[in-house]
Image 1 (cartoon, rainbow, N blue to C red):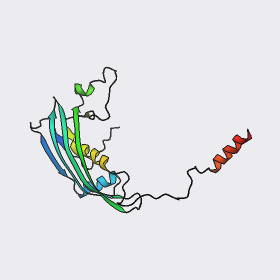
Image 2: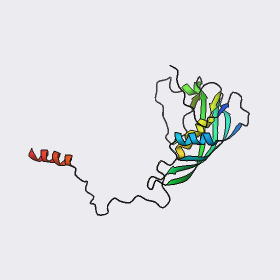
Image 3: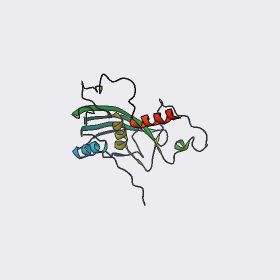
Image 4: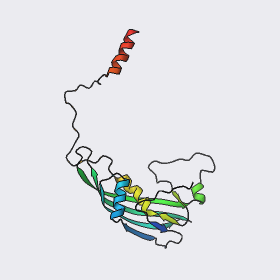
Length: 185
């Protein structure tokens, strides 16, 4: 059975074998079908606009640096009122790609020693095979990170269930039975 590779709705492969010295600018705007697929993939009501502006440059010997921005206008459902909420996403895209056979990609893993990671530092390089990098799928990852997981309509807040409830937890039937067993001993 062959490995099934999941493709991004905004897939945009870039040939990186011979990049211009100043880099290759990539500007991509998703069409209606791609925006509908993005909305479905990310659980959104709609994606009204999706645009990426990137610069793909050579890095070190065979690596690739991708930098730029992804911008989108989306419609989500308010978690409180269930009304549609419009949000704007503007995320900076930045990352490094290394060929799978690169020595830099294997550095640190062959020795069996410890690898120190800085949570606030740059991400480790991603690996690619062949001579293309899918910058559209890469930008979609940053788009996904920019989506508000709990969208709320402006001015709406969650209200307390009851103001007169005490701070003590409510004891259920199971807890009462367990307490009665403890009292018997």
